[in-house]
Length: 373
Image: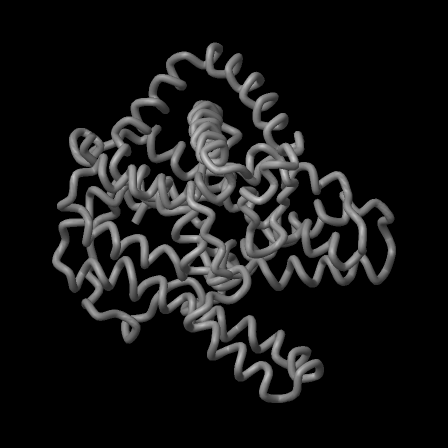
């Protein structure tokens, strides 16, 4: 169980499925925020609620696993370069987009809690991740922790991370709670990368068998999600910090949640590997390669679509409203990115400028593993 080996030179198809997997994940992330936001504003649920609940066991686990897949290629870099690429990089975008979000949300906060409220919440966001940005706040912590423990036996770290996922850690502190719930998937992506790539290769070779396995998995996942856990086990349910589609089902129980997450991760890898064999998946591959663009900027077009659709009442079905808000959240950032590239203005929104680097940027040929950097 070692993160290196022939993984250092994966083929083109492997990179394709990684980007497709990231594309699937970012769509699911937008979906949960769009759907929950619409349902809270409308005061009722729609059919998209079931989509969000179904994906909950594997939505973030897969995102974190993919984020760790190529870490073995760069983890031994000099500390300065490592921190520049894996910490400062994400810190820049977190502070930038935190400030942008507050520019839109501060007036409402001030009306509700006085002028001190937005200042207090903004400052708190530097220790307690704000809203949709918690993923890029937590990711650098994972990178640093993994660098620090890389000398330990991989099985020991993986077992400890799994134990953290089992434990009922509910401190209402995003960093602590999410670290305990998610680190096992990130570290698994790092240390089991070779096996994940091998699994994707097997799926590509045995497409019919993989397709046959997906349906039983979907049935089991749905049963675990939508079947209420016994009342006597209710105290052990892993209740999330926010409303993210939790149903109180078997999938939210310790150990079961890890098994459901691992199975769901394999499902996304399998689907991504299958989609990498068809030409029409190019848009999803592009979306995954630019997933940070969508992640950073989806909040505004998503929220705008929600407000317009609910205020105008043009569409009565809440599920359809949530679907359209999701589409706006995915398409809006892509349009913004296109405008930035076309005009050459605003590139700092998605590309870190030179002053925000602790290591001079090196001009080098595009590498085969660039999407994972």
